[in-house]
Amino acid sequence: MPKSEQFGFVSQMNRAALSIPSNIAEGAARSSTKDYIRFLYQSLGSASELETQYLACQLLNLTEENPEYLDKIDHVLRMLKSQINSLKKKDQ
Image (cartoon, rainbow, N blue to C red; front, top):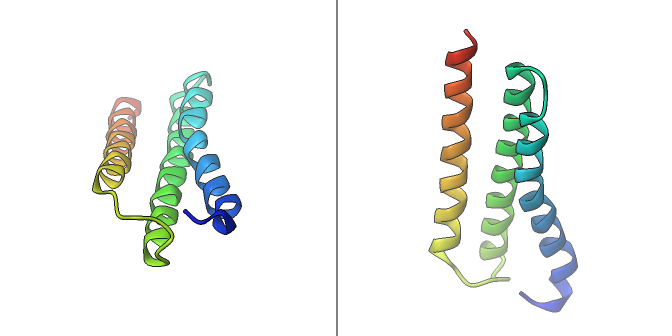
């Protein structure tokens, strides 16, 4: 990525990536399943934000395409959705 874009995109992508496990940890420490699910949704939002930022970088030709990177983001998105659905069923 060009140096001129490193601060903006890289900084935002790092924050989004760090937000994912941080929200999972915070939600897991809460006293209710409802709170945990809410934090998992925040993690899901951060993962979607990360995916969007990466795709924007590709569209702007700021980075080379890396299918493995998108596969990893997709895997995280699927795991989060699965955990949310599992907890919703358990909480009913």
